[in-house]
Length: 296
Ligand code: GDP
Ligand code: ZN
Image 1 (cartoon, rainbow, N blue to C red):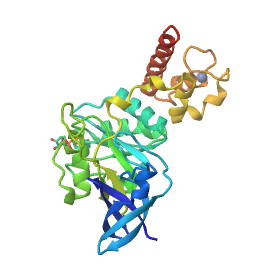
Image 2: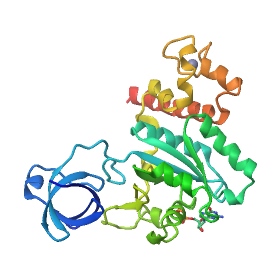
Image 3: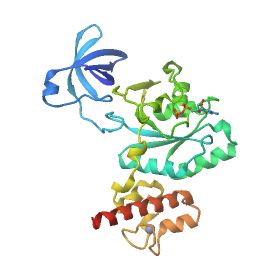
Image 4: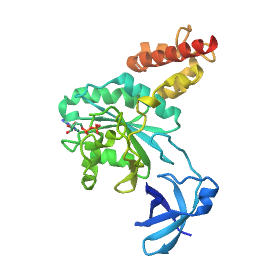
């Protein structure tokens, strides 16, 4: 039986891409009876019922499932910040990276609008995140820089774009795939408050074999980190992993403990100060939330 990827859903129909063809499919009643909901991003097996049409027989096991946007099998988030206009908000970027890691997804950091700043300035931003262990792409949708690297980062994966509005998420996708013709701001418009939308999100194809959700992930609602446990936060800062074995105490929170190797690494300039500052801020948020919970 053929298998394919669901790229779009609308009123009971699903577009399934398989072997370079798109099939307009319905879901078998049996799936509904078993309460199996087909999601965009699902790999499915289907039978061909006519030219270009079919019926979904089963959903293959999912690797992951996001709630916002409701997409299955997302591999990674591309967190986009502008080098300027709007000014990069590194606390927000770090918060997003923690949320992405906590969701079990990989992360790519993209600094867009590098045409607006000096090469030195965009390199300095990129360096913080490269040294932390992330894949980093410097790009300019306007000048068409960095697009090959971005395309490479998307290849073979399902990605969601994240980042504040105005950083150029739609512009980057348009630059990669001019056929998409997303209006500026379009990729983020659907989360706008007060806008009623029942439209499902869909997957956009990026050559050669990448998919990107047309709705951004990790917006405000997903950025409350207080659901995390304090002892797990450090795992979501990849650069801490290399040194934390050398902390004097096991279970060190890298906060006020003496003999902390992470703090020593910050002082030695091996771990970025801004990353560490944000770690402490998030840690204190989590501790504060735990304290409130206790006296409830
Ligand atoms: P989104 O809200 O993240 O989807 O951002 P948009 O794609 O709508 O872009 C917001 C604004 O930034 C638009 O006016 C774009 O023309 C502009 N923009 C996007 N990419 C670049 C870039 O690389 N350089 C410059 N200078 N402007 C850009
Ligand atoms: Zn420590």
